[in-house]
Image 1 (cartoon, rainbow, N blue to C red):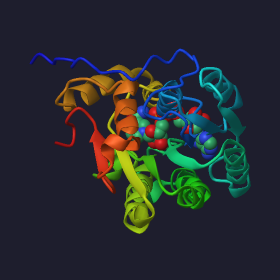
Image 2 (spheres, protein in one colour):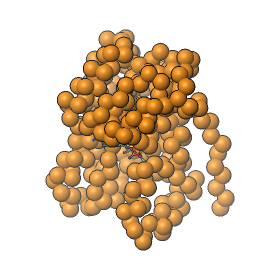
Image 3 (cartoon, rainbow, N blue to C red):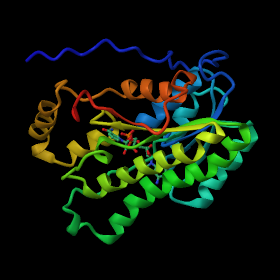
Image 4 (tube, rainbow, N blue to C red):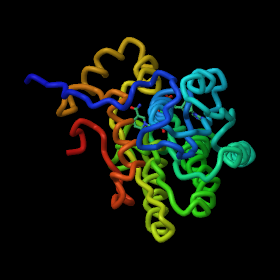
Length: 270
Ligand SMILES: NC(=O)c1ccc[n+]([C@@H]2O[C@H](COP(=O)([O-])OP(=O)(O)OC[C@H]3O[C@@H](n4cnc5c(N)ncnc54)[C@H](O)[C@@H]3O)[C@@H](O)[C@H]2O)c1
């Protein structure tokens, strides 16, 4: 079978040039997980379209790399699972102005073990980062969005939050929680002009995915080939393909889309 890689409509060039126009001109928001992968690219694309951002991640060096390409951005180094760290992000948002955008991309995979073999500490950590971290970001931003008269949230969940994942059961459970937390926000806060949607990527070419394969050692090539073959598109996704969906859901073009959990997976869950 021949797999055709569709032409992609990429967001505006991420060249670090101050963007005074675009879908997000003058809008202010928080991006977690901004040092790498999907969070980094969403931040670069939002900034290229005029948003002013607080960039949050535990990786200070990576964060500085992103900040250097996001005009007017403020970087806050911290752990999404720590309320005090998120308070610092909230304080940074208050220096910028009314907050109308949130992207929660910080996340971790955790152990590749059957559920009953997962250590309590690993279980707690996966839920602390993926679930509590998303909640703390929402807790920081929602009151500010309400005060601003509305806004748009995109959480980065996973296809593993929509269907069972036998390899990463703790991760799958945590991402399922992210999906329903997001839908709860949609149901609770639509009346205040807030939309909340989750994106549910399949396998996307990021450092996180590469880490999965490198941990497999000699088996990496065959497992990667199997994963690719399982996907109707015959390939993994590229980061800008997720970013395009994140920016659409944040944009006014998605004004009546609220509470959805959008697979971005080349048809894997079709
Ligand atoms: N890459 C994929 O195939 C894929 C698929 C589905 C969902 N996702 C989700 O997308 C999101 C982004 O992942 P990615 O693939 O870009 O991975 P990545 O490893 O490139 O980026 C994740 C970022 O989150 C940050 N982070 C992790 N734990 C943190 C913490 N406790 N506090 C602050 N920052 C923290 C990391 O430092 C890193 O910068 C994650 O939530 C992940 O679960 C990724």
